[in-house]
Image (cartoon, rainbow, N blue to C red):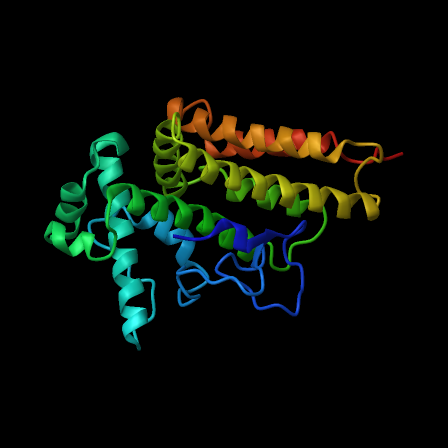
Length: 266
């Protein structure tokens, strides 16, 4: 699986560098000299979001370009397995997912699964890793051409269940969160997601301060933690009490929170 020591998080999304971008699409960069067996960037820009949320449909999403090499075909099959894993999680719950359940979702034998992943834990870590990678790429894509305070809203909106796809992603995410209790490996993956969100928000807040768009004197790390907690609360709230936390309500609460940062106008 991916060697997490091979990646560095940028403080602000969209950072330009002479170093080639990794699968994390600019938000996380691979250190020189490190090698991993992660997917090559052969998916379309929209693919990470569609894979993490739309993959629960009756069949695997056709978001990857046709395989031109044996390596591409191998990675495409691994994506098919992880999409089947997400569908199995939603159908029977993560704690009940087995290699047999994953194979059933693929309409294949268990041997077809273990050819690409030796154990259930290996495929689960890969699936969670790809879920987080999809969030990173989705945020980067959404931020293209966005300036000012709207960038904060964009980052938070990307993390919220504002549509059916988002709700599906959150159900999968919560299943992994539940399973992380007592699992150091899964807990580390969740910490990586929070570190990405916190780092991205701190970077955006610092840039907004330089532009004098938000108040000076703010504890940026504390404010970033508060926004991450807000997003988590809204996400859980939408799944548990969807009528109370409708998309419009989520957007309003995000805007209300961000308004407190703004420089008072005369």
